[in-house]
Length: 295
Image (cartoon, rainbow, N blue to C red; front, side, top):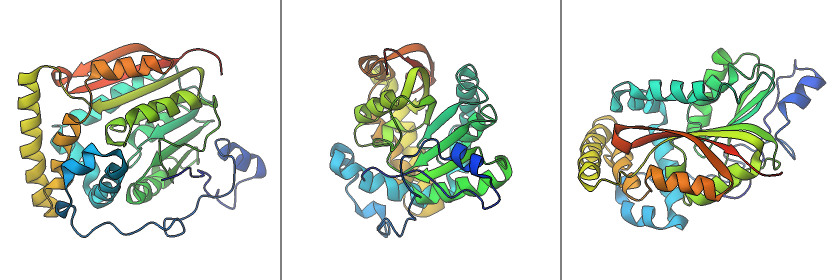
C-alpha cells in the first residue's frame, strides 16, 4: 500500500475558511473511494491462509491483517470490551487523559489505526477548534467511524480516511499529537511506522500508544499467550466461524517485541519516552513520548 491522500469532502454548507481548516493535513486532492483504489475483496476464509508465514514476512502481513479487520469491524468494539473484561475502555481513557497537555483547542492530531474512532473522538473533545484525523487500513472500520462521527463530532473537527500508517501523506513536523491504539503490532514493520510518527510530529509534539507486548518473563508469556489463544480462537469461531480472526492476537504478540524494546525504538527515532505504564505484567503498555530535536 503506497502513499495515500487524506482529504475528505467537507459538507457543502461549510464556508471556504472551514474547508481550509479541515484540509490542513493534506497536500493534494480528495481521497479516493475503496473501489477507486482497486481494493480487492478479502479471501473467503482467512483460516485457509498460513498465519505464521504471513506474520513472519512483512511483505505478506498486511494481506492478512487488513481483511481480518474488515471481517471483525462490526463487532470490534464489543470484542475489545469483552476480551479485556472492560479494561480496554479504562486504558483508552487513561491514554487520552495523559494527552491533555499535548492536545490544545487548536491542535492537529493524528490517530493511527483508528478503528471505529475511540481515541480520535477523545482527542476531538479537546481539539475543538483544531483538526483530528483518524487513519486505518480497514475500509470497514473507517465506514463505522464516519457513522459515529455524525453523532459524536457534529462540528466536523474529527475526520477519517483509509490509509497506510507507515506512509502518511502528511507534511513533516506538522502534527501536535499522535495517538495509536493497538496499531504498531499490526503493521509489517513497526520501526518504519515509528520513524513516520517522528517525521510528522512537530518538535515538542507528543505521541501516546497503547498496545499488547511480548512479556519478557517466559513463564508469564506462556500463560498470557495461552489464554489469548484459547479465548481468541473460541470467540472467533463463535462469532465468525473463523477462529483465526481473534486467534491471531496471541501469535501476533509472540512475533512482536517487549515494551522495553519498544521504548528503546522510540528513543532511537528521536522520541524521548516520558512515561510508561504497564498492565497485565507487561502484556499491555501505554507509552508517552515527546519529539526532540529540530524540524
